[in-house]
Image (tube, rainbow over all chains, first blue to last red; front, side, top):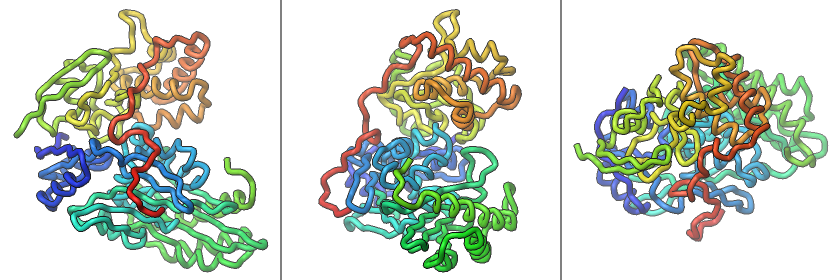
Length: 292
Length: 187
């Protein structure tokens, strides 16, 4: 349980970090919070030749309240985002999802950018980003790129970032005022990876659902949008029967893997259950009531 | 392999060492500093036995490299008791039979310390959630939950600033901060 040897770099500028990544190519890994990378290195599932620690680069930890988007610097600790007043007021969905990322010791060290860049298929922030159609900003030798969530996640633990690009900012669109939201997971223990998790945002107008967004985690190689369920909810009035229909649509579309924690069939069943519960919770929060 | 010279502070005392970059902070604390109260269970961030405070925050010392902790202020279980007098949290664990073999206890104690500092009057649910990142294989959790509740009550009834870790120093790179750099980017 000790990592293989590697060369360690702690650049103090983004430009230097990008240069190092360029020089070392696929053999290099960016170290941010290290809460996913270091376990993989300790178990020697990852053996990077070079580790580029970006923690000494100034100006990468911030939470900025934009007009429609909350911009979070890549090095912002998960715990700082979880306890941020801006995040609670403007994107409570994100706050609720953050509370279920690992344990508090992990969130004290883990970063928002690292969690997104690691692209674990059972992660929370990746699914929130997909659900809200958020974006990330990356910096490389060819300059700055903005990548929409839909183009970011390629497959298990793989994003569309180039080997010499560093993720510098994550942009989460705010939950619109009056919209209801929910983030729910089923896990064996509090803080464990979810067997299945779902996030929901419901915008309601004139007694009907104007727009539904549903994001799923733990149910495929990348965070999944439940598009069929979103479409069938739009324009309909909320009811238990409607939630059951949406759950059935989710079960029809997800392709979960089975593993030692749960069979694929069980995950498929739980996916419907969490979506149904999340829809119920979200509709209860829709309207003009102040956010808790 | 290039070794690096590092300096940091543990429990208020300076330590220096020459380390390979791959040496974890936990191993540095145990092997180079001789502070073997910090225990290693799983070495991949699951069991919580290696929990310490770094700049006032509870972290897994097995998921940090020692080279990352340059200039950091660490607190380990050795700092809790005052000579033979147990810290109220330790006393509560003892009183409530919250340990048997004791292997996991240092991690639980540091987790409890940071938790009660931030949440002085916790509910039972909050206690259980706060302890969820630490595993115990012999006593089980009921007595640990009871001990944490008792420690909270004891600490609340007699406020003693000297029983808490020193306040975190000013944020270093990557910590805190709510102001974005001016890069002229639209939101």
